[in-house]
Length: 495
Image (cartoon, rainbow, N blue to C red; front, side, top):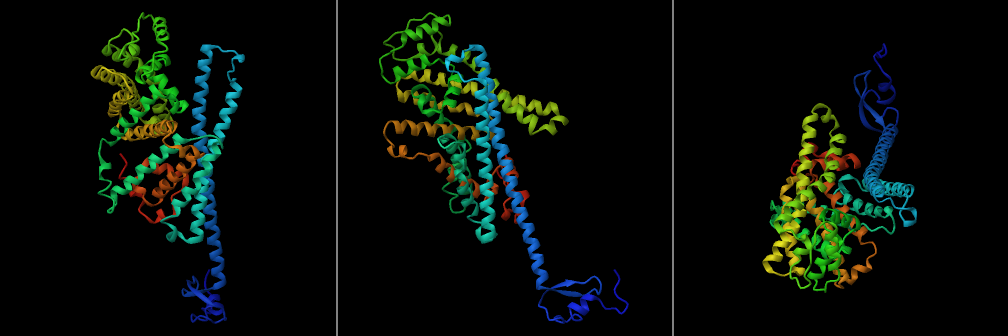
């Protein structure tokens, strides 16, 4: 548009009073450039109100979109993970059922009932993670709107994470998730320790946590409790984890009962049952009721050395089906683009990882019996302290795994060990107050998520990049982090 012939324009004659301002009696508060007269014009307060309203509407829309995205993505992750596990569980039950061929009168759940229950569990976990993500984002955005970004930045994510924690109740009001809560607490402790290490105030205190073999030591501690409970008190372990140990421990329950009897000083009650068990496997053995060490109970007529090697081969065959989906499914889903470009490299890494992790699990289970037999032979006795001592060095098998996987495995096992330890201690009457806490798992989970989400918003460099990318995808980058140099985030703990 060209200016009028007389050289004047609407803004100069009606609004800016020939550039002096205030010509029409309105309150002018902002200078703006006029494209006709090439001069600055001043915007009225009414115009700025419209602009501010437009900006607020855009900002509100972004907040709503961030919240809706977090809810949807959280639900997808929860439903996807639980749904996948449910599918594998149903397939495993169908396989066992086809082998055993039970009847309906035996009280076995039918296929339709199992599928309905799996769908319910899938929806519950989807709602759990979807609600957690949505609650965190909603509280985060509300605090930003009410108190401002920078004023609330230091504590906003801490509060939002704590408020979102009780969403765990959506998995079922009577469903305890102590193992999950303790595991998340361990993850929060790791992040807090990383923050302490880089802190000037607490750096010297947290320096021992930088020990490169700390994860292996933690695994040894965990193994002592978990494997002792596996032999002596399986009721202290979660049912799914107990089933896992019974499968990969490779010993029948009657054998474990015999070891428990001799370790606790209880008179033998099932020696004949153990002899019949070995007879069914083609081994004729006569057990001595006055035995001091249970080696003949553990491996029959085999020597300790021969038993370890034969057990290792069997354990490796049991471990392969566990780790094949762990490595191949991410290869086909997460690395699908690289798989099309370099299939041999991606599949090769997956197969090597499967072989390595299977070797870890098989050596771990084999060395558990090796170390216990060795300690029993050296000290010529079997009691509870000896079982705990014999299972401690089993954790050294973790050195077979990649360094990046060691901390994950050790934390997972340590969470299981803590749960088992406190269950045993509570049953022994040491912590009677724990029995009065009905949903301690929700409290622990809320505290843990508060710490994790605070670190996510304020100490992002303590996260590994792959975890940080997932959190950013679900929750959206926290508003404060847009002011920081994002490419540098997550690089410290990326390996």
